[in-house]
Every structure is written in C-alpha cells, then in structure tokens.
Length: 485
Ligand code: SF4
Image 1 (cartoon, rainbow, N blue to C red):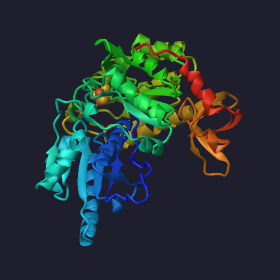
Image 2 (cartoon, rainbow, N blue to C red; image 1 turned 60 degrees about the vertical axis):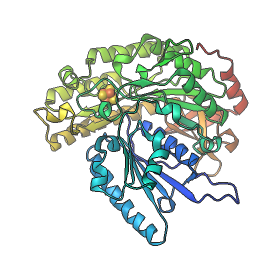
Image 3 (cartoon, protein in one colour; image 1 turned 120 degrees about the vertical axis):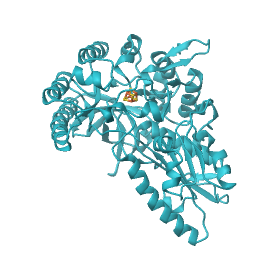
Image 4 (cartoon, helix red, strand yellow; image 1 turned 45 degrees about the vertical axis):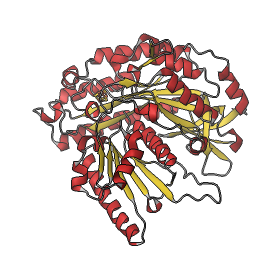
C-alpha cells in the first residue's frame, strides 16, 4: 500500500460567527490512506463532542496522533513526536489551557499501555478498531488516570461513527476515501497489519453506499474504496447474501454525482474474474490497478507467505490488460527481504521490466518486531538493500516517466479539485492519478472535463481544455446507470 506521511490538513471548520467553540481538535495522520480516512472520522467523532477541527497544533485542546506501524522505527518516531507535544502541553498549561493528548492507530494497538509508561503526558491510547469509543475514553480520562483501549471490540466501529457533516465533507474537497473493508487474514511474514488491524471484516453494502450517497450529495465526485485487502470485500447485501467488490463498485457507480471510482489495496489472490471484468464494464471505474507483487522471485514470495508466484501475477496483469488495454498498473516492492540473493533481486527487476508499471512504491525490507520475517536467517545488510533499492527505483522511475510521456497528445477526462498556483489555473486528476494543470475557470472545480495533454513531467501533466464540460453534463452522464444491488 502506498504510504506517505501527511498532516491531516482538512480546512479547519470555523463555526458560525457568535458561536465560537471553546475547544479545537488537531489530528495528525501518518501512513496509508486508511489512516487518512480514519483521521477524518476521528475528527468527525471529536466534532460531535464539541471540538472544531484546526490545522494548528498550538491552538488544539485535543491533539490526536493517528499512527502507522508499517515503516522502520515508526514507534521511536511517535515517541519523539510525543516528546514535542508534551512540551507544547506544558507551555499551554502555563497559560491555564489544558491539552488532551491521544495516541490512535496501529502503534497504539501494538504498544498499548507501554505508551503511557514511556510518555506519561499521553491521556488516551486507542487502537484503529476502537476510536468510535473516543468520547467514553475522554470521559474516563476526565475521571482520572489514562484511558487505554487497544482491544478488537466485538461491535463494528463503522456502525457507531457519526456521519461527516456536509461542511466537513466540502472542506475536504471533491475526492474522498470510503473504507469498505478492514483487517487482513493473509499474514504475509513481513507485515504487522493482521496484528494491528485484526482479521478481515467487510462493511455491509448498504452502509457503504449510504456513505457514498452522502458524500456525493455534499459535492464529492471521486471516491476511493479502501481496505487493507479491498478486493477481499464480501459485505452483506440487502438480501443477506455476500456482495463482491465488483458488485459494490457497479452499485456505487450508479449513485448520482459519482464521476469516478477507484479501489485499493488489492491482493493478487483476491483478483476475481468479476473484478477484472468491472474494468471493462463500469465506465466510472478508473483504469488503474494497484496490485502489490513485493518480489519477482518465487522463493522470496514463498518466504513472504504471499501465496502467489510471479507467473500468476503476470497472468493477472495480462488479464487486466485484456479487459482494459489502457489500464495503468502500479505495485509495491520490498527489496532485501531476508535471504534475497542477487539473482532473486534480478528476477524482481525482470518482472518490473516485463510489466511496465505506471508508478510504484519500493521499500527496503525493515524488520517489524513480532513478525516471522524479523526472526529469519539471512538478514541483508543495509548497504546491499540501499544499492538494490536504488537500482529498482531507477527502473521504476524510467517507467513512470515513459508512461506519462505516452499520454501527451491524448484526450483524458479530468476531475478538477482545486485552483492552481498561477492565475487562471485549475488542477485536477487524470484517470491515471496524475495531477493535471490547465488554464480554466474555477467554476469547473468539482466537474469532469475533457483535456488534451500537451506536456508531461515525472509527477504531473499539463493540458488544455478541449470541451468546456459543464458540471451538470458530467453528473448526468453517470446518473443513467442502474445499481445491481
Ligand atoms: S496482504 Fe500481506 S502485506 Fe497486505 S495487509 Fe495483509 S499481511 Fe499485510
């Protein structure tokens, strides 16, 4: 899954004049898109408790660090951040202002009470499946002692979370994440997710579709369906039977206002025929498939407990391309997995060259305590890992640049989401995820319009509007579809 450290910088929800709230919440999100989604929902929970969201940590009465455990030294980075917030808390206390400090997310799940032992300034520790209980935990904290909830509760948090207020949705823009599935049963030998997020669960289809309808009514036009193993989705349908991700996508595409859908992150073993066919049949489904392969060497894949081999992966790529010839493939790679030989690393390079990815994420293997791979013999030295990563990066970067260049001269549908930095410029997303810069009227923000690509950089495209698409035309085009659910 792509990871990126990000500040959860949704625009602060300023209250109406005259009803200045007394309290503010700041949520900092680390790691994957699922954490970004969770951070927004944590802000929604806090808002219901009377906290208005702020992007300035200094003015926050409630500070939430929504942590990620996936990267190397993640835990130490969280303790370092907590030290800074403790000092901020002391400065605010000197001015008579109280600050409540919450650690949420996967580090909270993994560390539990240890967090408070090492940093007593922490008031609440709450795991990724329990944050709907934040109001009770804050109440418990007020009654004395730190409040810790690092369990996997029996109830489904999604059933208990408040719906985002329309103003909050609008502040977050025209693209939104919607979690449809959480947790993982795959137990890849390098990964902590099955331990920090628990086993796979899927939200009922009706709940997901109701959330998408709310988002679309509030102006969201591009939805990414999220899950640690999103293509293992098997939510309950209205008739009690299981609904596949493909059927969920088709139903979501029929919701008025939804212009584009994406999904991530997928496991090769869960790429079903109907999901591949959806790329041919559902026009609103973006021609993108993020399908992590991790390694091109079968022995390494077996040691990773990936349960697929390189041949099966390449076969899936071929089938996806037959269904949608312009599909953009992306992947995750781990280099320097324990025991990886130079020859095995070469097989990874060869697989990358054979597929030709539009973009990818590559990481050095880093041992996560408690995972089987951390105990394996043959741990690779840092120098070798760094050297292999540099070679893989170079190959993937060449592919990305080549993919973007091939788009020059093509006409793409772009969903515009914000003004550009230059006068008269607006920015949107291509179907393939690149930012596209055009000269255009700001009234197109929130609409989809046809753009001819005239230039390509490594990360973005430059285009010009070829048809001044109206917002209504874009919306109506999608409203004629029927939901299969
Ligand atoms: S499929 Fe593997 S890498 Fe992905 S979340 Fe599950 S255990 Fe982790």
